[in-house]
Length: 510
Image (spheres, rainbow, N blue to C red):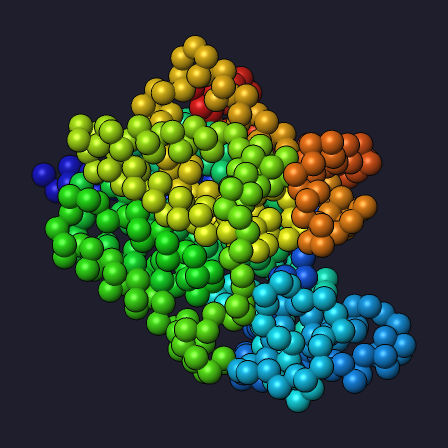
């Protein structure tokens, strides 16, 4: 009967509308959490990304000549500038380099990162050392301000709009990760794990706060997981598009391409490997063209000849266990996530394609760990927590979800370990989101970039300094905590964890 068919169609449309509305509300609440800390967290690293839309749209190029002063102008600039926000940027700053080969003949007068490219010469065009991907992602957010004639070197504008862009892309990445986890976890488990990703990693304290590259990396990684982490056989176009996503992620940060090592299922036909590889090359192509046009070589990556001379055991200890950068110190649940991937490796003959791909997540994570363990600046500069390794936080959350769903942490001793690990991370990153300032512990008594040995000191770890600073936040911290809790309550209500009378009816993660 026609009315039965009409009723079925209407019912399906209504369900789709309700589902879409729920995803929108989830996104809005996560987005709000990125601002609910009421605290500015940023670094000079983000300035080139924020300025790229201005030079692209106003000058039609990618050099930063209009934003800098040269070495010969330094004394005049410092003496005449009354407002630090109006001062142009130093062309010798560590995040700038020459477009192409530098013609500088004198050493720079300002410190530059170890192994970084030479400073631009007096007449060289000035370019960023960073890949252009994050600046391109931010372009739609800066477009209205560029068209309105806003001042490009307004630091407040750069930081606020950059915060908006970073939070938006992190929100999209979190929703994609949520959809992935929901395929093999319950609704409550998925909610709890997404909140762990948002509040128990560097997402809320770094990547959603300003235009660092991490938000773009997370978006690419989560997109690839969403395309491929499924139980059913997938068409080759999924592999191809996932490869393109990771390739484009490499335009944000080159290490994003490593995730491609994990995603082809080992029992897939070779044509699936080929589709992923071709997609990866297509996605990377814009970066190669950019490097050729800007630096004069397609294989030039902008950062200079960075040395990888850190003793690997020192680097591994620093990245995993050091008191002020160790992943297992800040995020002890990460060990359980890695254990889940190992378990999935031995269970994949009976658990299907998802467990097979979950086991493969160990490969890119281990390669990334090995690369940064020998990197000269393995600690990632003045920042809170394990910034570099958190680029692959979506992989760990996806692995942990598999372990949680399998019941590996549901009973007895392991349940207690799981909750302690999660609670500890939420405490540390929650405190950092409220009061962390890179100009305090990171600089006193010495700059950690000059004296990284401080990162190994158990007598004064970074996280303890942040916890001690909480009372100094005063009323702002109290308001921020209340606002964050209110948003979480709304999210719990949207997910049905709080009944109409305000009674909590279920926990987020069993």
